[in-house]
Length: 164
Image (tube, rainbow, N blue to C red; front, side, top):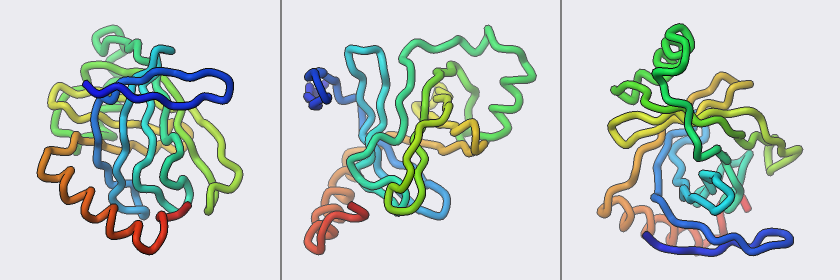
């Protein structure tokens, strides 16, 4: 595991890099998120590639690391969640409460809304922006994909950072 540090407004928080993930985010297309865990008990997804609403470098989601086991949730709640993320091809094992960032174009009027992380047995997870009813399925990147993402990112930086 790689250790990083992010500067907070008043404190320095150590974080652990968990993984890089890819997601297809609606009309915005494919995006890469770095997922970290900090000593405040939060799992944070920060955009490496941004979009017209939430640019690169901004927090996409912040999730409580303490899950509620899926067997403790009412079956009807799990059924609705499972139906919304059938693309994962697996069963929900844990649900983590948290928030997700939404904004207008060019990061106008950003705000946090209630969100959930749905964890699956197959290493995938989904973030559901509850107000929007929008589930986004994430999957870990494999080593060859890191190289391709790095190559594309460096090529895009030649003309300036995307959506910054």
